[in-house]
Length: 468
Ligand code: FAD
Image 1: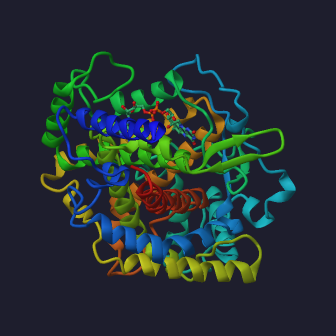
Image 2: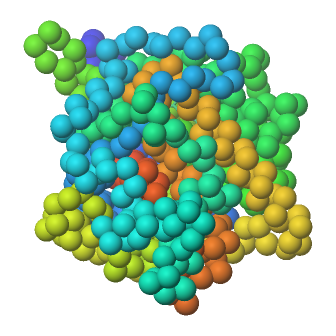
């Protein structure tokens, strides 16, 4: 009896404490409601709602996307994890075992993937080489039609494109290595505290169009914050133009997604015999419970859905590029490559059928000169964020941080590329618009991460239903 009474008092006390955290008496909500009740309905700046995304992602897209990402083409990602941090030099490698990245031995990666310039089919590649050589010699092979000559010369130039939102990783550097993403999964690493905060802080404070005078709510590197900072921050955000607000929400969505993953693949048990990874509900609540985070957690989860919609729209827009007959997911295994292309197109057509796509036409509209300036600012800020990834002290976090910013940068390039806007979709695939293998691998893997986060939210919702 005594123990039961103690437990009851404990539970009542906890409910009261949580209720009083928001400054008043609150009806006792379940743990699931506290994380998710505000994560429902319509998303700001969009015509889409959370429930439609959940249904679409969890049952129609997620399983097939996971299959695709397990294929050789998508699992090997070339990355330079040794690039120096361009912003400060006191970066300490955290040295934790779970931060280590195991690169591939050279014989593990299929030759087709390693052959440097494979972007398209074998025929297309040899054309590129011919044209590059002809160009160097000051002549173009006359046996090619004029149209093909023009197109092929364009292909060779695309990597310098001013459409890029990311600083390209120097994958030709001897320091760049292939990493098998399946063997180095994104999960809890223990990277935390001031080093991790510094990275997030620089990202938000210096790159999200935010004036110094406006404080981010709950910033661990700022002292003595209260309700008024929160109000100032959100009225500042609401007063921004839609593009700058979107920028903040994309970064916050990415941050939320990373934190969902580390809560879903948390190190639960670490003995010399085995390591056990799984859902850590307490970790999730600390980051996303509406009361424990003073309302911030649910807002962050909504930003994650916003990011999902942006990447989904980019994928739907770039379908004609992948439909080109000369496009292959080339690894050298003809049968497998053809099957993978079929699966890729199936996924892309499913994505195209999504009924409530984000409308990117509301971005960079209005006065052309001003819109172009804003777009350029947007691009430069995002490029800066991709460079900050070289300052992340945990290599595993750096790997996934680089991949996901490159993937999001590729999505933005697709959404706002003039070449794509001018040529797709009505007039068919444009040969002026290109994506490198790096961009393709990062685009799909980054979207795979957000898709996994949305699926994990369903898992956490179920786990939290059993807790009060
Ligand atoms: P942090 O997540 O460090 O956040 C700092 C502050 O930012 C918070 O106090 C809060 O005020 C605010 N904030 C938090 N979330 C949001 C949001 N979504 N939107 C807006 N503001 C927010 N750890 C791993 O275990 N595995 C990984 O793979 C991993 N990858 C990382 C990749 C990068 C690029 C970085 C910078 C960090 C990564 N980390 C990873 C660390 C992880 O993101 C956290 O920094 C760490 O767990 C400490 O969390 P925290 O609760 O102290 O707050």
